[in-house]
Length: 71
Image (cartoon, helix red, strand yellow):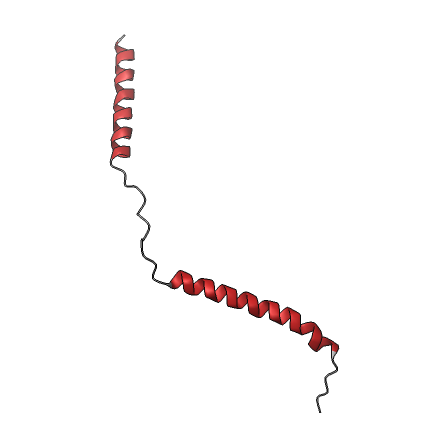
């Protein structure tokens, strides 16, 4: 009976230690409430790059079909 009592007390101590460590754990940091404008700038940059890419692919077939003369 002493073995069962000792094992159950070790399990109870382990549970207490785990619960104590969970209770003192820190949560995730709160998200910033104000934007500093970098995400807006990055969004504008992505849109401009997409427009440049689309124009490149639209204009390139027109240039490829014309004959180039170097001199």
